[in-house]
Length: 345
Figure 1 (spheres, helix red, strand yellow):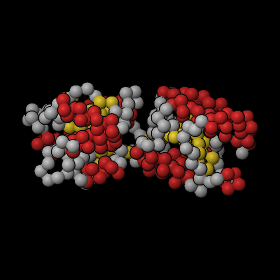
Figure 2 (tube, rainbow, N blue to C red; figure 1 turned 90 degrees about the horizontal axis):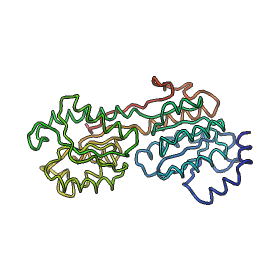
Figure 3 (cartoon, rainbow, N blue to C red; figure 1 turned 90 degrees about the vertical axis):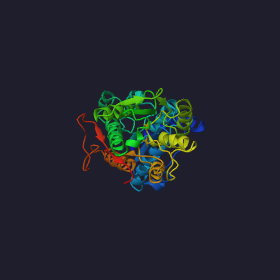
Figure 4 (cartoon, rainbow, N blue to C red; figure 1 turned 120 degrees about the horizontal axis):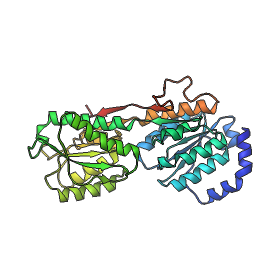
């Protein structure tokens, strides 16, 4: 494609320099132009490969593009500067479409500025930038979920659990003493899940009472396990519920509880309900074993397929959603993949 050839001539030195210093692995559907023929190239920037949920999205996306596009995929490793360098390389290579899972959603304006200057259609996904930033470029959209809905579903699950299990009120005071595990301090999804899970449970008639400070664990299992161990040591017998923004942290909390004899899945073992988000395989397994109560399904496979459909349209010069089943929400630029409660039943 003409822009790919020109861009490669203009920036070959930068490409070689950045390639020499690493910055993430690259996965391609085919090897070399001779093998790829006239297939478009889709550039995919992932915030962090070892995020369990995002791994589901990227695997689905790559599978949906197989045989239809060449895929250049990079691991941002949780570092925005690294992702910025990867973006520059992809633009210099002349990719036909960009699919961007931001490390820091607040940095999206820089992506829009560079992508629009190069005329490359851009799909942001999972980590949602400000709506006005996306709207500032007529070839940009967002595909993801509505974080408020995940929080509200957690709140509904809490109400159902307390109605079905009065024994969860350990001290019999009619209140729910809970601990909160938040993904990141400034992440919009983490903030919304933290806020609306409690607000919805309260709206459902429960009296919610937080134990200790909110534990910010950056979505990480090991970090959450250590934080939960400290919370248990400082608040023995006072915790009745664990709310986590994602299943990774929820599993860490389950591990901490299991280490002191709780949530082992054994008949008659003490149990504190733990609720997450994502419905990862690990969480489903923990629910099946009686170690975890519930989660909220965030359908990574569906998200990957939606991104692929929009990317292929954009690469062909069509509108993102032409000929698909997807529609924009009231913002006019965002496609929402619905959540669903998951209790294993």
